[in-house]
Length: 130
Image (cartoon, rainbow, N blue to C red):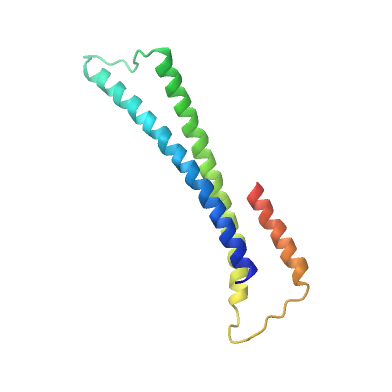
């Protein structure tokens, strides 16, 4: 197994775990919002004129505002994670394509390999930590 494959696999696992937790939080928040919307719809169906507002107590208002903020922050975090995944993919694919060139040759000539691998590792860490 080569270095690029190991790096790609480990980064993919970490990002997928973080994305799964983010999506789990988003699903919980959306469920709370659906309940609040259902409550609002039941109240609206019983009124002849709906002027676009619903009377709620402070607890319901706070819950709705917190859920709304959670959806916004979770969406932003999911977009950030997707951007990181895209950046990592775009960084690793050229390396893999270069390694696949000339498969009929048994050896790869790679002068100053350590310097280049360390520079690439630093680049990947920059993507991961941004």
